[in-house]
Every structure is written in structure tokens, then in C-alpha cells.
Image (cartoon, rainbow, N blue to C red; front, top):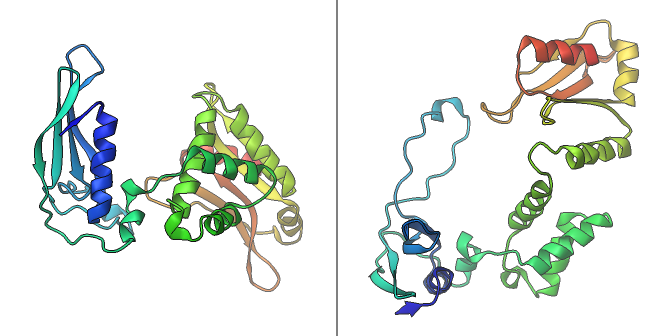
Length: 270
């Protein structure tokens, strides 16, 4: 079997995988010396190999489920005289395969097209939520089985596209996005940046927080114990207690770290 390009070989193996009920990924590659041309490429089952032990496991409350089980199914191609030939093919799997139409929900078979992404961007620009946009696309496609992706795929593509628009060191678009969001929500905010124009600390509060602080700000507590993950950034809260002995928030911040300089800067802004 032969192919004109590495991409053509990938599409073939991916289509084959979809028909059998497994997902694939690109494996090892070797390039022609002093060139970007791929000499050899391995396409494997997505469950090939095993994950190395995560030394951070004891720090997390949640760990990702293990999906790899050492499956040895693969296809290897090699370039000869401008044509890619299959020189090794293993079809046996050591795990159960997806049945029926469930294979279309496996990772390598899901794809958001440029047209779908453009429609989502237009819908977002006029205030339509991602969920409503995906629901409409699902109806137009006559069901989720014909859509070709799941909602997470669309969210990731939209986020990635907006992230790529902001060049390294260029926070203009990001800052403007934050400003517009806070202004629409009647927020008061402060954004700190490093000398290389990268955002570090963001502080915000709203009119209700200001009003509550004026009434119940005799005693406050500064708390940065909440984090999404142990290696994430601290999310700081200045809280107090109202006359009903209920906790209320006076101010919030997303901090770069918990150094003395950062914490003092946050309190000065507050």
C-alpha cells in the first residue's frame, strides 16, 4: 500500500480505525537529514504505551483516568522515491473496541471544521452563547451523531483561536477583553503587568462589594487558600461577615504568586 503524503496515510489509518472502533495518534517520526521531510512515521492506537508515574500525584485531589494499556496496534510508513509505503502493520488490540456509532466520539474522529468555527465566532459576536450555537448546529445536522464534534471541542477551538490572536508580549487584546467584561458587569478592576507586558495580577470588585464593605468592613479576612490545582495561581478573597452572620465578599483577585510584594500590592489596591 502506498501514499503520496504523510497526511494521506494518516487519513487512511484514521478512517480504518473509525470503522473498527478505536482512535489513533501520531507516534515516532524520523526526518530526512537537514530537511523537514518525514522519512518514517508511526501511527498508533491511542491506547498505545503506558503513562509514566506522575510524581505530583500526591499533591492533587483529582487525577486523570488512565487510558493507555500498552496496545500494540500500529501502522508504519517509510518514504522511498517520493512515495510512502507501509512496511509494518499490526492489527491486534488488547482492549475492547467501540461498537456501533460510538467510534465517532473518539478523539481522532472528532473535528471542528473551519466553517463551523466561523459560524460560532459570528454567533458569539452577536451575543449568542456557545451552548445555543452548538444546539442549533446539532439540529441542522439532524442529530449529534452527524455533528462531527462535541461541545468541548468547539470551546477549545474558539479559545485557541482567540489566544493565537494575542502575540507573545502583546496584552492589548487581552486587556481590552477584560476591560469590556468588567465594564458590562459594573466592575471596578485593576490589572498589573510586568515590564514585558505580560499580565500578572488582576484585582476586581463591584458596587455591592463596596457597599457591603462600608457597612460590615470592621473586620476582614484575606484568604488565598482556594486554588483550582496545586500548580495553579492563587485566587484571593477578602471576606467578612454581615449582620446575619453570613460570609460576604469585599474583593477578589487572581494573583501570580503569594510573595510578600504581590500580597502587599493586592492589599494596597483594595
